Length: 233
Length: 264
Image (cartoon, rainbow over all chains, first blue to last red; front, side, top):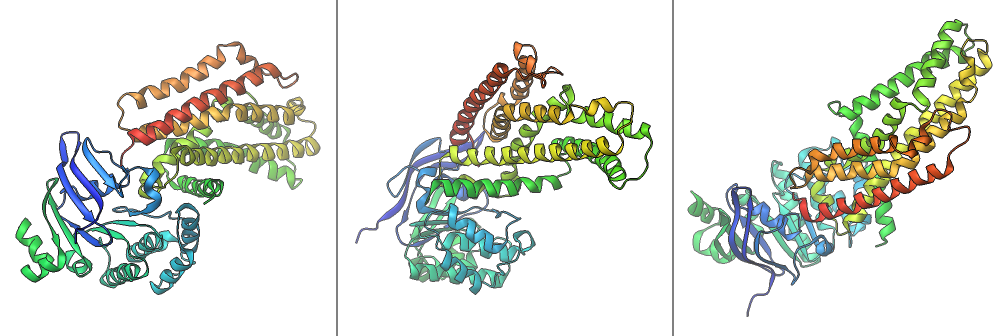
């Protein structure tokens, strides 16, 4: 059976002044799967995700997200968790969820409250008082409680504790049972996340190095982490 | 999803976002606001409280209070420039604040027109400015009333005669010009984040050009010291028209730049 792709990039190039971030990148992300986007620092992973939501514009090439060019106009179907993104510090957790219900289309407030409860977030706590791990959990809820077709996570595990990582991973898996969607996770924490990947794409210096089914790679090489080490060490 | 519901939710959030800026001591515009409010507060606290509690203060002191009050709240180069500057300062800070607080990724990916996003920032800045004007108006009226009834024999008591009307007139001018300066602030904020060379440099020059332009044209009649006695309605209407027209142009320029030239 031929694979369906939610996102397709063809010969996409992007440079910041003299630095080439993406170099004629051609890659596709399968629909309805969790794809791990992996690569060393400066490989172009974050730039790629930003392009999909229209935060960065390509210099050359074409990008298709569900058949359309990226733009804020199509972001009602996409939840994006920015790298090092913070939520509004003066809001409480409850206010953040209520605000998200208004500004994010298809935000399920009941689901968000249930997730907050299961992730041990105090609704009365002000966001600026939350630990990094708790704030990461809130950010995850703000994405997963949206009934959208595509979720992009840019470093969702960065700098947070093991318990929070496990809770985040579990919630991503649960969300796929509730409502199948396409998820792309860009992370350095391969060990924690690799069990949830259906598909993996490795990029380096703005070019694709390898793209394959995660299960197949695990069978052949033992783990995604060992494939990563083999490619980049 | 109702767009107006989204808009007012953004306005409320932007207003709160703005309130974090008072903690940002490094900002020059905060220092300007702080200096003005501090001067006003000292006058209010010393004069108002002493008089309010019926304590005897010297006529000389009461006279000084009146002089400072008169300077701080009636039309003159300082107050008008200050009142121009505040709406600019409020909104120019709002957009960079999204970057500084790490919330810009969420904000810029919202699936709404850039007009809606920037319009909400303009509205939030405008409301903050209205709040400032109300504080100035109420406190100055309060102090005027206290001095008028409790210390009526000071030498410059005459200055208080038309003070309420003069304050109202100053606030009205500031209000009429605020659409332009609010949009200037937002546009400045957008340009500071845009991949465009040169424009941020010439922007302060445009700001000054408008102020100098107004003061060197017949429109300056609205700033004359006795204009409050017989307001030049036509000039006031023109000032408002110019303010709204320039504000609209700047606003659409800013939304265009935000959509096409701002990257994260």
